[in-house]
Image (cartoon, rainbow, N blue to C red):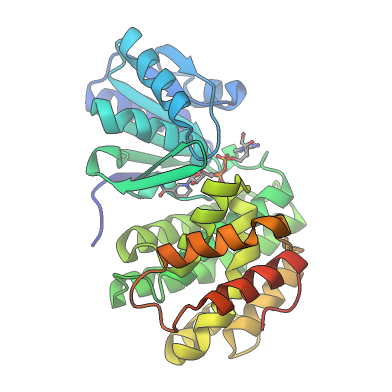
Amino acid sequence: MTLGQRVLFGSGRAAAYLAAEVRRVGAGRVMVVASNGELAGRVCRDVAVVHRFGDVAQHVPVETARAARAAAAEHGADLLVSVGGGSATGLAKAVALTTGIPVVAVPTTYAGSEATNVWGLTEGRTKTTGVDDRVLPVSVIYDAALTTSLPVGLSVASGLNALAHCVDSLWAPRADPINLAMALEGARALALALPGVVRDPKDLKAREQVLYGCYLAAVAFASAGSGLHHKICHVLGGTFGLPHAETHAVVLPHVLALNAPAVPAKAARLAAALAGGSDDAVTALGRLYETLGAPRTLDLAEADVPEAVAGILRAVPAGNPVPVTEEAVTALLSRARAGSAWR
Ligand code: NAD
């Protein structure tokens, strides 16, 4: 399954592309969703904006969604433009969900929400997600020049969040050969380009390749659905407020170590895509983590482990390649908390 949206790539082109998209959809009242006024100003340079909503928070608290919907109504918005990471995109999606106002997404991280029809809202300690085509951005504008200010640590974590979309697509509920092809090409691009971003965060060519990989990763994820990795991170982020990208980065190798032995042919293709000089996917991923100085420890309190395990066991997707037991999840979280070996 691939979703219908316009996708534009061009470094330094965001303002021109956005102006063209606004004309194309015939919008006259643009509301921007962005916490970063400077980035929003650059992107909206050639567009009349009726309002900028800047109160963006991770996992879209329902109170924030209500405030953004009220602002859209008050200003008569007929187009939402999100400029920022998955949190800005997610808030624009929350407005689109109840109003039907179309979204143009201008992502500045590698979270990938712009290419999915998945929305998320958090009430208290409970995060709810759903699928609705109204939240799929009509257009996505990828401009690598907007990402050079993303700090190296966050670039690495967010890039590994994108890689997690690829890896989870190997065994997610709707995994198929088409999304596998996109996932493997996405993994190849990410593994090749992320070290370049670490060496030089201003390297535009490396940043472009990471955006390319992140887009393919998100398309694969939207098609294949959430596998075990995403279900684990969903519980950790939604219930315990752990930071999205870093949590994905830390958890990913542990889930790969758990599942890879049960899908040897796909794992071998992933190892080849990662080009880590090993035909073992976990070893290849480990080498990439070393090169990137990737985060390894999960900031989950020991006292929260039982609640996390219970939440994860309730969410385990059908068809995971290995049975997921209480013992296995407890061991996985313990290793992730300690930053110890993945297997
Ligand atoms: P984020 O959007 O919260 O951004 C992280 C931080 O980076 C923020 O402080 C932000 O201001 C800053 N930032 C963003 N771009 C920057 C730039 N270019 N320069 C400097 N700073 C910049 O985090 P995220 O990891 O991008 O997104 C996480 C959220 O997205 C979570 O709520 C997650 O659930 C959601 N998400 C949803 C989907 C989906 O399909 N619905 C997919 C992926 C992520």
